[in-house]
Length: 176
Picture 1 (cartoon, rainbow, N blue to C red):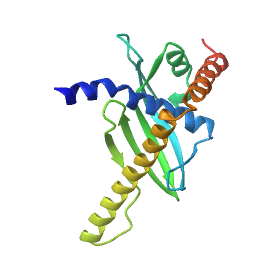
Picture 2: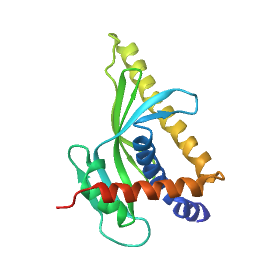
Picture 3: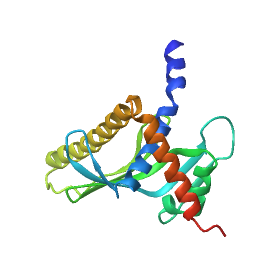
């Protein structure tokens, strides 16, 4: 029972991670540096699910072309909603991965890997497995960077920058 309680008490971290990815990708013009020093391009793709930070409330599902820049996304952020699931696209060295990531369990869903170049059966399987391991390693590097920042001394400053970003998105968005 203690393990379930621990999971429930830290569930918010995954959603904070998704918000951090969104903010970081916009702040750094989609170029993020991994723990190993490699650079990747990270974009929020065509689906974002927003839910209240605390308590009950309506869930917003944003989809279509670039929902991260939509007026609805700005309003949801302003209403203290953060992403609970996002569709992400990562590009590294001309290879692209696309997948959904839920904040509650950080499981990769609907993974689309880069095209496999191998011809043979075993080689093709090995390459596909390698490409799946690559995306897992990139996410692990991003998660590590997030956690280091989250427990670091500068987290309160980062939160202020995130709040400023939310305010800027909201005020820059024309509402109809």
